[in-house]
Image (cartoon, rainbow, N blue to C red):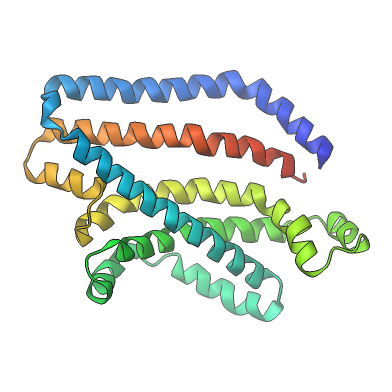
Length: 249
């Protein structure tokens, strides 16, 4: 594991210029869109205070949903792979549930919980949990037998085995699934907030759309993309680099 970390670090350093170029191209494309749509619309047509307050509210919902979904995903993945009975019953059920359209639950959730953040958070959890679950199950299924045997020899059982062997080995898969889940959450967030009419970036975009201000709407969407891109660069990219030290190839 230690030498594997140095090997992947060298590969990441070798590919760093290419990855940096791709990120710069993406950033320039988003900034170009912002400049174009800003020139087509009046800058003051966007209520920046309302937009950023809405994004902050949406971001908090995504974070809360992610933390809950991550715990649920780890529990389901461990349960579905550590017992033959649960594996035979849970895996087909999980495979069916992941194909269910989560947004279809919004009317039911709104009727139960009302028009508040609870309905949106539940929707985001159902969207985010599946990429992490199946990524973790795949990692557990490909667990190296020699490392598992070494952990047993050194007395890693129960909670110690979970903390010092299983969970660290799952970090790369968890982060890979998390990045996919994070992107899917932002995709579903706008629709969930518009339907449930809670304050957020989605409802703000919906209100601008209702005024038929297309350039302003495109400008707001571009700002939305820029914020998500910035979050990915600040949070997920460093975490993905960090996870390479736990790879066991």
